[in-house]
Structures are given as structure tokens and as C-alpha cells.
Image (cartoon, rainbow, N blue to C red; front, side, top):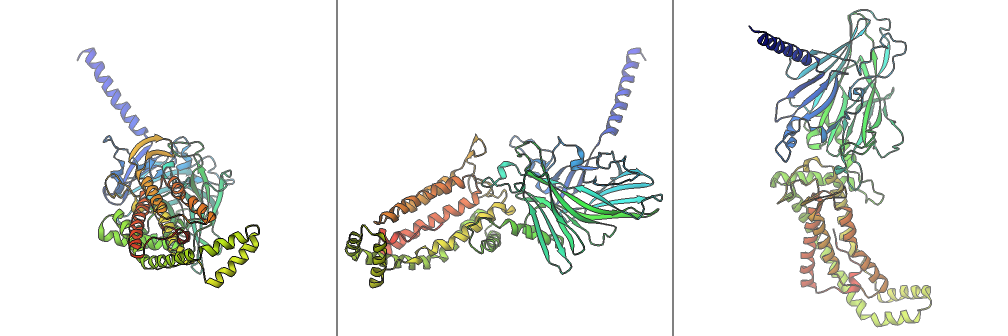
Length: 576
């Protein structure tokens, strides 16, 4: 062998050894839980802190494909979020809160390099770290087929008697964050929130929530607290469609969840995520230091998946999360009619029932709209008939009304008194029921508004032509004009045009005040168009269908009853 070939062989061996050393030095560990195409996860762990860095829902793998055919490795940018600029302790799922005078003060499990103790089983991985003094801490993640959670077990194993054996210690875990990019905001409102529910001995529950908008100057806020009368049922965070909820496993008596607080990240805008817009829960727990040869264990399950009642009802452990969906159906508006939350819940159920027959969510919305408007046809026809009768009577008495107005032109109070007597004498009372159909449809509109805002089942569901996601604006043409108008959306413009047409086809009254009010009302469609320009296209489908129905209904009624006068039309309004 020549010197050159000997040198080449030595270099090759050195490169192989260096590669082996480099491979052993890798701190990232990837683990597949479940089978591709069904429920499960692909998770990237960091051995520093045994941290969860990335989470991919493998039954959403098709969403990872980009327009150019490339694929993202993780669904991180859409679902579970970790800020890589922060130290690993912020996503480590374990951070020591207090040790007092513990002999383990020099070992911080949140940043220490853990060993992979077990990784051979298909759906299980175990990390371990020696804390000294004969105590080893282990962190295991186990997936069971048919579920949408990970069994998370945190345990202390004692090979020697520790000076603090038998004592309780305060620990903390940092939960996963669920990101909400600006594109998911609704009317400027961040859908992300931290949630927690407690339950008392009588089985009564109480849901707590914190949104990032609440007191943003506070870096941390308490969320839930367990005590002698309350136990924690679950804690976690959500965005518009997904949730990450930690809940205790029955029978885990060595340690227990006792509190949760909420922090906000990131410190600066990152990846279309505004600063301090992502709520992150820190779970407090009391942990018993075991005696020699014993083990203390905290067992919890961590739900990672869609925020949907349809999915929550598939397993008894997840039914507890249904209150989160109900809470999202609360519009939170001071002018919300009573029962809107119940209507939103019912409409979601009815939409699911219709969709199960027709197989298309957009068509289900169209059918629902026709059903609601069709049910109001008899009421609306009766009101239209009453308005025409009122208009005919007003036209007959118009000369007397004008004379009364001239007689009291300089005394408004006298004119009002005279008008009251005139109306009593001639029984000239406006048909107050003329606006009843509108008041009936307003709760339906608000119910759909809130239901479509957070409905996971409409996510990425197509309708017709270019409308490929009913939970987003229709996005006909990309514009790139900032967050307000990144796309040209056609449906809101069609909605404004149809609604304005409906308003314009109603004659103006002769009374100056009523005439001015009707003119102002004609600008309402434009205001709604601006407010709802970037709203879910599913709501636009409802609005357009409702407006088309109203136009057809208007023409049919006029053909049967004749045209409506301006004086009668002043007491009616097109329904939405």
C-alpha cells in the first residue's frame, strides 16, 4: 500500500469515527407515535430537558405539502408552537419551581442532558436523569391507538434513602403552546386562550380562561388553583381550531396537579405571530420524594388535537373539553340577543346533520339558510300585508296629517300630543311587527357568526370553484396588501351588492326624519362588508343565499300584494 492510499484510508476511518461521534452527540430524538394516516404524532424531542420541540399531527400530514411540492417537516407553524430563540426550559415540560435546601440544587432538569432510557417500543419513549443522592427522575411518553393524547408519566426512583424522603416538593411543568398567527384573527381578535377547569366534591365544574389581551403588562397570571374543595379537571391552551390540554389520570396519588399560571410569548413578533400573543400554561404540582426502593409518580394525559365536539364525543375522557367549544360560541357582544349561544350550538349540530346527508358543508349552509328563511315566509307575508294596509290608510289620511303638521309647526310638544290623539281617533298605528322577521334572523346570524369563527369541522372544507376552505375568506386573488387585505375576496363584495340592491328596492318614506334614517341604513351593507371582509367564507355563503332568497321573496310578495308605499316601508327592514 502506498503512502497516498494509506493516508486516504486513515482519513476515511477518521471521518467515519468523527461521524460516529457526531451522531452520538446529536441531542434531537424523533419519535413516531401511531400509524401514518390515522391519529398519532411525530414528535421531535430535545435531550436537553427531555423537551418537546415540534409536534406533527400525522393524520394532518397532507397539510404539510407546499404549493411547490415540497414538504414541511412539522406542522409546527400551524398548530403547536415553540420559540427557538428562547432557552430550552421554556418548552421542556419540566422546570423546577422550588428546592429549598435540596442537595439537587446543582442539577436543573429543565436544561440538563437527559439519557434516552427506552426507545425500542413502537409507541413509547422514556428519558432519565440522575439527580444525585440516589434519586433518578424519569419522563415517559406513551401513545395508545384510538386516542388523541399521550400518556405522560413523571416519576422519581430512589436507589438510596434521601434526606428529604417522604417530603412534598413544589415542581412545575411548562405546557405546549398553540400558536395563533395574525391570519387566524377575527375582526382583530386573537382566538388563543388559556383554559382550565376545576371540579368540586359534588361534581360541579367551573371553567376559567385567560386571553392574551387581558392585562398584557402582566408576565404571568394565575389560572386555576386546587385546594381542599376543588380538584383540577384539565388545564391547557387553545387557538382557533386546536387545543393542548393536560388532565390527570385517575389513581395517580403520589403527586397531583395543584395550580396553573399563564405566561405570554414571544417577546417580539415572529413568523406572523404578534408579541405576547401566545398563552403558555405552567402546571404546578406537589411531588413526594420517595424512600429507598420506592417510586413516586405523576400520571397525566396530554390531549393534542382538534377542538371539536364531534371528536370530543368519541372518547369519554374528552367529553370534559366540550365546555371549551360552548364557551367559544359566546359572542361576547354587549348587544347579543338572549339565547345566541344556544342557537350557535344548535346550528352546528344541524349543519352536521345536513352535511352528513349532502356531503358538502357549503351546500349544508345553503340548505340551512333556505330552511330558516322558508320558515319565516308566512310570518313575513303577514307582516307585509299589514304594512300595505297601514300604507293605504296613511295615504288616505295624508291631507289631515299635513294640516295638523302646519297647525303646530312652531310647537313640537303640541304637535306630538295632537298626533297621539289623531292616531287614537283614526286607529292609525304603525305595524310594529314589520321588523319581527329581522329580529328573528338576527340571533341566527350571530349564532352562525360565532359558530363559523371556531368550527374545526369547516376547516379546509371546500364548496364550489375557488372556495376551498369555508373557515377562511374566499381568497380569489392574492394581493399582498398587508394583514387587512392580503387577498381580493369576492364573496363580501357580492354580499354588499345584493344587500344594497335589497335596500335600494325599498321606497323611501315621505317623512323627512324617516327618509333620512332609511338613507343612512343604505350604508349598512358597506359597513358590514368592511367588517366581514376577511371573515370565514362560510358566513358569506349564508349572507349571499339569504339576500338572494329575500330578493326572490320580495318580488313574489309584490306580485301578490302589489307595491309597498314609502310610509309603510319605513317600518320594515330587509332580513339578513
